[in-house]
Length: 79
Image (cartoon, rainbow, N blue to C red; front, side, top):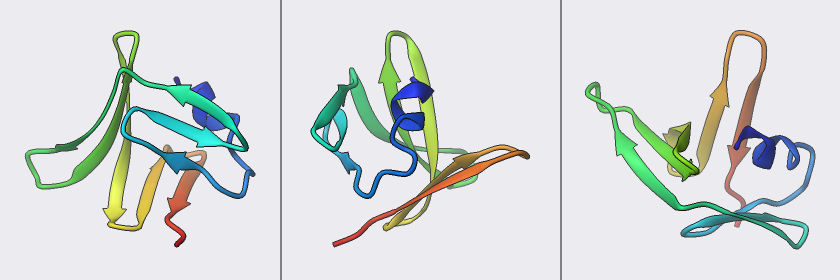
């Protein structure tokens, strides 16, 4: 599932739909995309597919972030 996002790194625009992401005319479907709230109140945008989940931390209404100690990917909403 990470491959769906890693292929998009460096592209100008990514569209997140109700059950897909799309960039440059290529659409990647997901079984479900939902918002999950953790016990400490942090929100995550969760992409579910084939029994796997990938969560992106919701920084604010316009920013998603995912990463680890080596790399962070930040997505910003544009209007």
